[in-house]
Amino acid sequence: MRRSIDDALDDHPPDDEFPAVSWMVGLTDDPNASDDGEPRVSVTLEERGSAGRGIVAHLAPETARRMRAAMGAALREIGEDPGA
Image 1 (cartoon, rainbow, N blue to C red):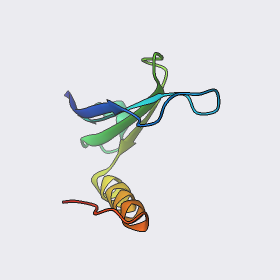
Image 2: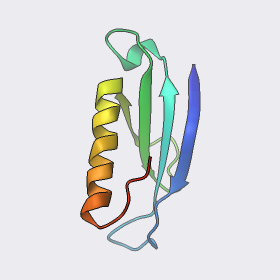
Image 3: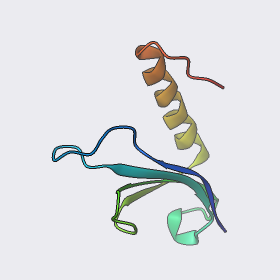
Image 4: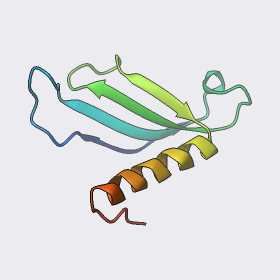
């Protein structure tokens, strides 16, 4: 099973120092993505226009929750509500 949950482009104009990046969050149960064969949350980052050449992280549920908490902390740090 592979399922896309959400994807988008980053929010800054591309320039020489910071190329435009796309991100995607999904699900995978690829047995090669984990040692225990359990489904994983996948996070993909790639330069816009470079489909298939990005970096993919296959996160266990605990790691995905840690990443969610880190995003919330970063939003609070800049004065934003982290949402639900």
